[in-house]
Image: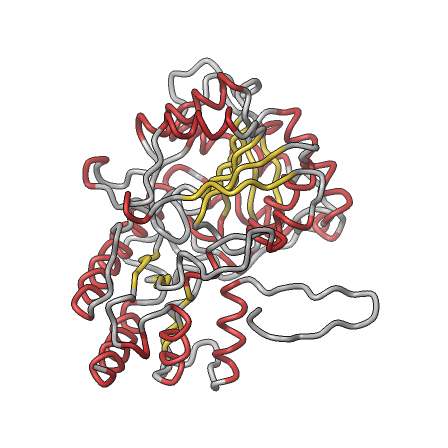
Length: 421
């Protein structure tokens, strides 16, 4: 639909995710990573340098002799223990049921964790939200045992979905599992407090597995929750062995180490065992040296400092981007309560810029990269009828870049819009 890449022999045409597509197009226009003349509002990673108040960034990794060997597919036991301790400290204090290392599976990246989970699913129906993370599209199509069912969230309602509606969807469609990014990429919508507790309770009562992508759970912008608040369904799990809740997270966003490709899945032991089995034929497990180096990052003092540094630096960038985009005429239906993205509607911009794809193309000439909203209209196997996407007027803007780049890109974007008026 976007481009004709052709096929070769036995290989099918494998689509690119939205971010990879826009980056490929930007490179055709001369973009190179780290070029200060460009601003990448399309980037799905946070800035990785040291922030004020942040613990020292890891600049070297010690490799033990044992690290030259294969590691356990489920991950080093020491790192699994550290991940379990992180969840127990932040979300399960005072609860009799606690996570242990056996409830944790270490994976080489977030997509790999999701792929392991998808590969371990049986012949079920799995619900997923619209809009949501672009990489879900191919992931939900390639494993044919389960059937993906879209659940449409309405922009006019602020992408809200009540617990009554969740229950109706689960029971009415016979869903055995539900995949949710929380906070949501791209809208920044956050499920928290009583709503998140209710969702876990519904899943428990109807035996519907929740697969929760919590990669942005440290990026929380909710004044009512207080300073340095984080969110996880782990807080509302009654029994870690029987509640059907699988949490996926990692170092990529929350600790700002995307290049490490180190993630984890946390859930009942029997589910973790199945994920390890899937990993034995999918990926073989994460590298041992980085797993060992990650353990100190999960220490309480280091984690708390990282959370505070992220929320201080990124809240300021969030407020800047919201203010500037609104002044330019971009409509923000729901200010993000999580993530480092602003989901903007560009319908009211000048005619040459008033769809996500038009703005994306024109912005490249101004050395600005963004992601058209159509890529988040997840449509596995292109099963839904071919018609204009509901999100064709939307754009995802990332405030992941450093503030200096952010300001320069907003200036160039504003200049482009003014020149087109």
